[in-house]
Length: 133
Image 1 (cartoon, rainbow, N blue to C red):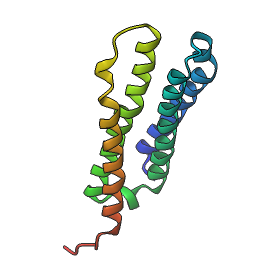
Image 2: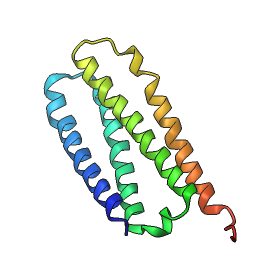
Image 3: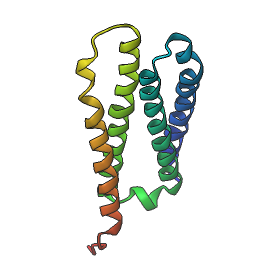
């Protein structure tokens, strides 16, 4: 087990639950705009799914993390979720406050692209033949 990644994942799950609760209760108190609520919910869903994935990675520990290519894949996934979910959280905040948010739009697909790349890179790292030193 990798205690740092496992602890980090647990905190990510706790934060996802807090943000999800806000979306389910607090957000609905300030807007009935379905597009805002759905966008926020998508951010929470992806946040929680990936936090759970990191929990699994942390529990697996060395079997996942000892190969440098896998560490880079997890980094892509981590940055992807920060950009993807983070931009959706920001987008919600900006839209609720009536602020300009056009600059946030391109961040979400960049985060999604990093998520796809990270998962594909992780799959590649698991399927490629082991190299002998």
